[in-house]
Amino acid sequence: MTIYFVTILGLAGLGYLTAEKKKNYYLAAVFVSFVFLTSFRYAIGFDYFSYRNIYQNVAEWSFHDILRSYWYEPLFFVACKLFSLTGLSFSFFLIGIDLFLAFSAVWFIGRYSKMPWASVYFYITLQFLAYNMNLIRQSLAICFFLFAYPFLKDKKIAPFALLIAIGGLFHNSLWFMAPFFFLLRIKFFWKTVLPLCVCALGAYVCFEPVFAIVQPFIPAKYAAYPGSYFWYASGYEYVIPSLLYFILLYLFRNKMAENTRAIYLNSALYNLLISLFITKHFILERFAVYPFTFSLLAIPEILAAYEQDAAVHCQYGKKYRSILFLFLLFGMGYFLFAAAKGFHNVYPYVSLLKRA
Image 1: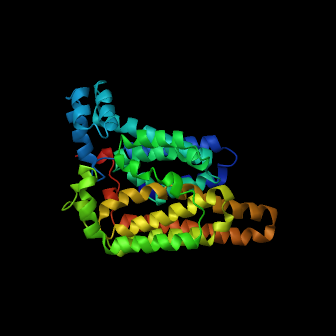
Image 2: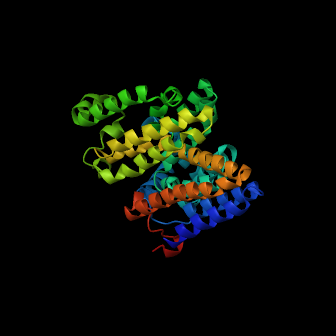
Image 3: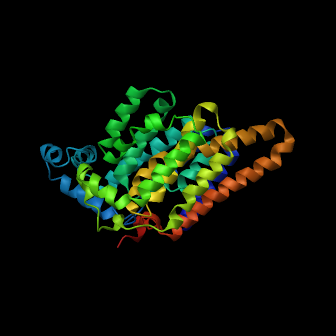
């Protein structure tokens, strides 16, 4: 676990001290750190060996075989095939993937975060980096969701839809996010939120009979999960972090910009509602991660607003430090909870040096 704590404290501390003055150098350090941490691992993540087997098997396939077997999400397998033509091993392929994942995160944070060092801190503590070390295909899809953010914010449906379509060819769970182009931009009012919550609770109570009806219409890989590890129910303690996140955002909603407030509040609400359903089946966690990505912008936006208040009025300095401590504590609590639960089998860290 030491390497995680060193990375969290090192990058957060470095960013706090230097990011505003030397932002590009700081983000370069973040990029290198992310790539090193995710590429130098061995046998962590539930799917590590599954991905290695896929890479080795696809190397023997033709492109026709790939498109015939995985026509609904072929891009990851095509990437495996293209990389295998170089003759390099799975470890090098993993480095290539990690370079792209790290670039996407750093690009998103560098361009849209109002406090980059805080976004980096939450990228690690809120488990986005851990996702990169297990759910590789979905992490690739998440990258395209990040790329689509400016088009969501600017109400440009065509490029948003295109990026969602392409990302879904890596992991088609992303396609379920297409309606969020409209849902996330609806103004957040309790008169509309309460009926949504009532409907969600009704669906939660009636989940099993409802799922039996819709099961024939969903992708086969999801319908086939019953009986597997990912079909098990999670405890209600898994809902608490999402609930706390939603409460924090709601309490500090007035510190968000007018053009992003609805997106951030709605995304927190949908993350909470979807997280509730993982107490039915763990597999549904995969859908909650998409709206949760906006935490990387929402929390820093709140903190930046308080920091600006403190810069203008000295008497607000203590309040800023208190709010900063509150959110940092939330992030670290989330991280410790995930580590204690062995989140996606990425804790503790195992490096290539310990390879058997």
